[in-house]
Length: 487
Image 1 (cartoon, rainbow, N blue to C red):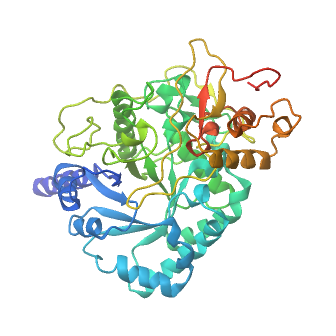
Image 2: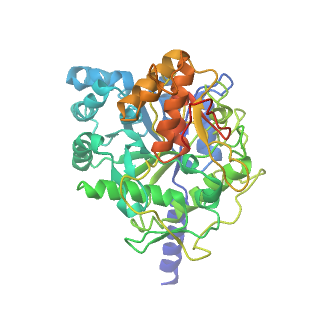
Image 3: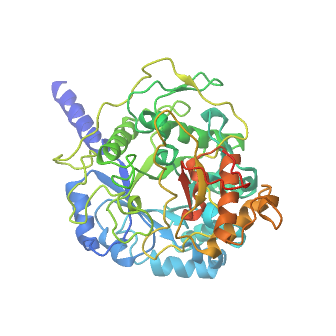
């Protein structure tokens, strides 16, 4: 009997050791100083608890490097390839060229059909997405691969509302695309992938809530549930939206989430990054789930593995990494097997510290993640598109008004695209027309007026001033003469 108990105890310890960490990471390659893929794969296998990796292309050197590591790999099909993959012959050729040479030695678990297509894609790309997913699944099966799931990651720009979480809903215009997609995922037992970034919902008032730090919490008046962190709220909002269209049973994956350790503003700091990522890892691995999905464990992928010195955009874009290019930790997030050095997470919220603040009522509420007009920069091969704009620095103490204006370096072409977008969204464009109070021959002046009108009309969220990185917030009133900017 004693021997049996000992064996059972040992088996339990082994099982707990094997499942204690199940955290993933996004492995981007927009840098000129990264170590070779084989070295990266060996480092992750031998030195970290990371057991899942997602890449933003189908780089054969990277895929091969993860052979026999027991690290699960997600391969991403470039957005531009999607329309052609609606044809079975093309899809099978893609499988033969990019999957079969490495399978099953490399443990490929997901194929991501593009990235944030419903956010960045044109109509042809969006309409091709679900047919391509179905065709690619059939191609895998015909090539004898039946355990690799096909999905596609979404920004939370697909959300109409996210507060309170139980009233989360998809935007009406994406429901006709998401419904057949969710049906496909249910049929194939694939996950619905989303990219929740509390970083983009940051404000000084919500900082502790975003970072999993002790806070007064948020109360959902419709369910009676209390939330101690923004990540749970975003995941439950997506769950509620999927449930509202009949697919609450489809598994969710947090395909990207993270926090930059450096940028031009205090919101990016090593301590904030370690608080968010360190607490997130503990939270996900606890198996607690969320208030609406108790005891659910999500595949969660931190963005990103490395700081990437060639990413375009502001300083934050180059500083999302858990590791420096020499593979030393930027901070101690809890992924190293032999924890060492660097900043460590502070106290973590487990229960609300005061009576919870009621969440905002449901309705045509704010989107949960950035959506921006204008054509985004084309992703660089081997990496991914730039993230939405960094949350703006807080205005003067005690609050204050903010306006959205065009960035100094924005091109006239991009600004004209912003004008066209805003005017197409029902914003009154008469003031910038000839004879209007804000007419100006300078396209930047006209765009600034309309970008601000859009920002003010859509809830004054920082991401409403992103405009594919051509907008910026200011605390200086840009009104001039008879041209008055709303605030």
